[in-house]
Amino acid sequence: MSGDRKRVHSPAGRKDADTADAARHRFEERRAFLKRAGVAAVLAAGSTWPALAPPGWIFSLRDPDGKRGAPKEKTFRLPEGGFIVEKPATAADLGVARGTDIRAMIRSAVDGIGGIAHYIRKGDIVVVKPNVAFERPALLGATTNPEVLAELIRLVKEAGASEVRVADNPIETPENCFARSGIREAALAAGAKVYLPSPADFQVLNVPGAALIEKWPFFRRPFKDAAKVIGVAPVKDHNLCGASMTTKNWYGLLGGRRNQFHQKIDTIIADLALMLRPTFVLLDGTRVLFRSGPTGGSLSDVRPGRTVVAAVDSLAADAFGWEDLLRRDPGRLPRYFAETAKRGLGNPNWRETVIRETRIG
Image 1 (spheres, rainbow, N blue to C red):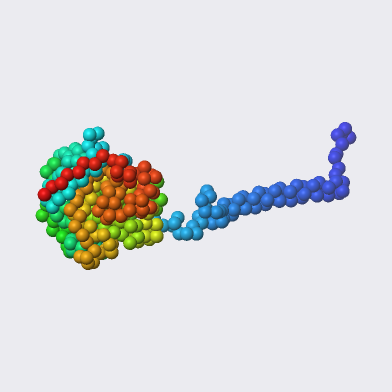
Image 2: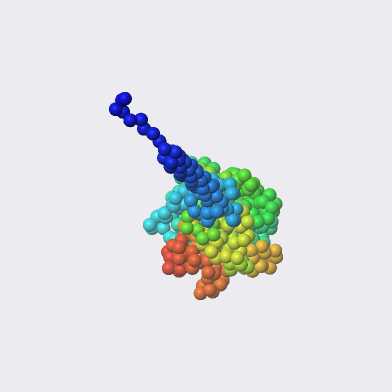
């Protein structure tokens, strides 16, 4: 008989082994199940997170005000520093001309701040922004005097400008406002191009630091490739902000629902001074709408002003207009003067500035 012993398994031993194998199998199956369940839970949580996460959190899809779902508009900026040309050190801050000869007055006023050749160079494309807000005859004083506009255009062209563009976005129907005010005819006769607004002409302008119009539709088309910008605005009463002059004039470049800004009129005017930094401005005081502004409607609301003011500082020009032409208390300047000055965008203390005044005719 061989010395090897045959291993014999008892029924009890086989049963124990089967039980152990079954337990291990169940354990492995449970572990695999838990692993699958964990992955599924993570995936489920991941798919649920964007819908449940608070707005602004990473991967959040929540959009309670609809802004995230709105199409992203392309924005643009005007040149850094605006269209400013620093006046000569020896020039006045305000060039004031009084008289009845509009051509001579405009030239004298601009000479006072350094002369047109200092501000406009040969080949410049120049935007001139009058106030054409309402469908009114020029004699009612609610819009820029077309004679003043025409002479300014001629002066700019004489300095070598390759193109002069006259633009505004009136409150009332643009075609009627430009025609009834005499602005269209005067601009074309002087050799300028007239830009009437259409929806396609507006693009969102980014104005860093603005309180109300940091991103707002702006009448961009006339500003493409423009090198210089000049504002020419009438002197008139305004029922909301006290007075509308050169700083308020830039309101006519805004699109969108701009009437909402009437509730914060002083703030929007300060924003306008930040938005548009012109080459210089011309305050048209040839006639003064001293009451019932800004629309006017009666010749009894208008008196002769016989004055034109040129300035690089719009706020100083407006403060002069408030006191000298509207004949109002300098101690009661509208609040937008202080708001604008606080931002470092002008000096309302015009009496502290250098003034060159001439009388013509």
